[in-house]
Every structure is written in C-alpha cells, then in structure tokens.
Length: 270
Image (tube, rainbow, N blue to C red; front, side):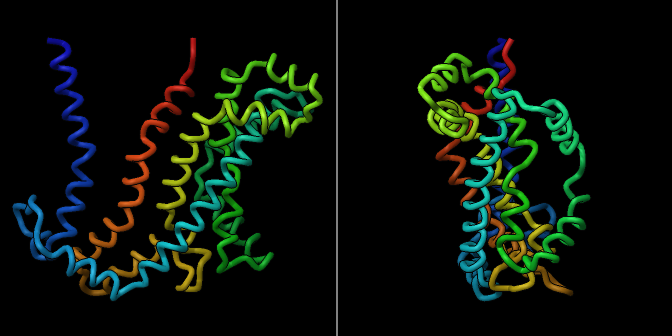
C-alpha cells in the first residue's frame, strides 16, 4: 500500500513538473485567440508552422541561436576548467590564507548577482568590451558555486595517497590535477557542466545590458523583441520560446543519467 501511495505521489509530482512544457507546446500550436480564451484550450492546434514562420520573419533566430551556442559552449568549458582547478586546490592543498579565501568565497554566494551588474559594467566599459562576446564570457569563467561544488566533491572522492604517489613520480600541481584529479571529478563536472549550460543559455538581463549590436544578440534578448508595443502575438512568442527550449530538453534527455549520478555522487556522506 505504501508503495502504491508513493508511486501515486511521484506521478502527481512528475505531472506538475511536465505540465508547463506541455502547455508551452500547446500554446505554440495555437492562435492568440485560442490561448486567451476561457476555458483554456488544452489540445494541440494546427498553427505551429505559421507561428514558427512568423518567428523567422520577425527576428534573426538562427544568428541568435549560433551566438548563444558559442557563448554557452565557451563559458561552460571555462567554468569546468577554472572551477575544477580552484576547487581541487582548496580541497587538497594547504596555502596561506586558505580558510579566509574560502570563507570570502562562501560570502559571495549570499550576494544577489544583480548587485554586481553596475561595477561589472563599469569595468567592462573601461576596457572596451561593451558589445562583445567577451563581456558575456569572461565575468563568469569562475563562480563561487562551481568552486564550492568541486571542492566538496574532491574532499571525499580524491584519496590523498593517490596525490602522494603522484608527487613521488615527480608530478607538479597541474599534473596532479590533470592526470589524477580530473578523471575522478567527471561525475561532479558533468553536473556542473549541465547546470552552467542551462544558466548561461537562459541568461537574459546581463546580455541585454552589455550587447548593443543586434547581430550579436543571444536568443533570450532576440525573443524579447517578439513582444509588440500595443499587441502581442502570443502564439508566435510561444513558438519562439519552444524553439529556444528544445535544445535544453534534448540535451537533458541525453545526459540525464550523468546529471543524476553527479548529484548522487556529490551528496553528503556519513
């Protein structure tokens, strides 16, 4: 009986989680009048091709897609490298000020990211990066969460005896990281990579602030142009949103096993 109740509750939870994606798909196949009517229309319509065509005619979707893919890929690779290197160092090496630096790192987790926009924009403006992809990539190449995540995983997963053996073989710090730590950190990096990919792909406010060239707009900024001043074609907006969301859904379907294993591997152990 308990198993039946548990599965029933899980089914309800899954249904609630999946419904927004289903509703998005339904709205992208209907006209605005069907979307706004009451009671709402919960079945697929026949306007998907029309809505997608309107998206392509109103904005440069493919250019925005390429821009977003480039920024996201480079950002994730940088995050994986710098956060794993810093997290491994905090976990397995002693150096002056280590505790103070890590404490300062944790404090930054409590500060809303929006508070950093003004000083970040001033710095980027001073060095002439406004309107470039560097303004989107460089500020996020290392983040406090990623370093903290890898540090916690490294403490449990990497045995000190492996590092001692590597030192006896003449490995320096970077070779210990590259040859010993990195293969062990793969589950944690899989989770961090997916987490970072979703965050960068969906970022809207920072690209809106620093980009001033329409040819370099990311997907989220480009899709915001579909909203009209007086009227909005919600079917077209939902179709654009669906096209921007599909890569995330497809990616998650392919790497969901690594995502879940990464979370499980990074769980706190007794």
